[in-house]
View 1 (cartoon, helix red, strand yellow):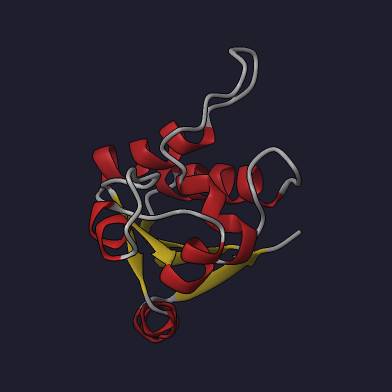
View 2 (cartoon, rainbow, N blue to C red; view 1 turned 180 degrees about the vertical axis):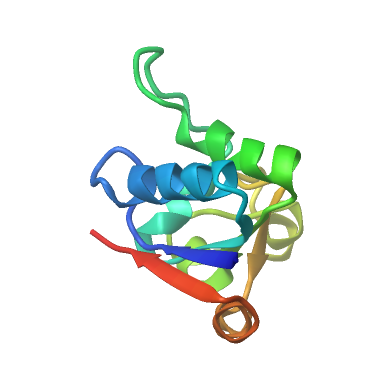
Length: 130
């Protein structure tokens, strides 16, 4: 089965992001494909490249990145939600005159059309919200 996940909760503030990650890892372990994770609302904070959680907590950004590196999962970040919350890739930072960026590959800024496409092109789209 081909899965897409919609993550609307920020890391460490609610359980949504961690639950989505664990679900994705479990689905892959059972032979399913996790093709897309779409981060929306406060869920975009799961893509912040400067996240540095304490060593005794799971590093959600690195674990989502591992899904991409090990299984080819696309990590899509809503551009409107990201920009509102200060998550910019290098291109958007330059376009808005900012000196630094807070989002980098394999996470990519994209529009809501990609979320709709995920809902239409995958067998299941599962939402994780606070």
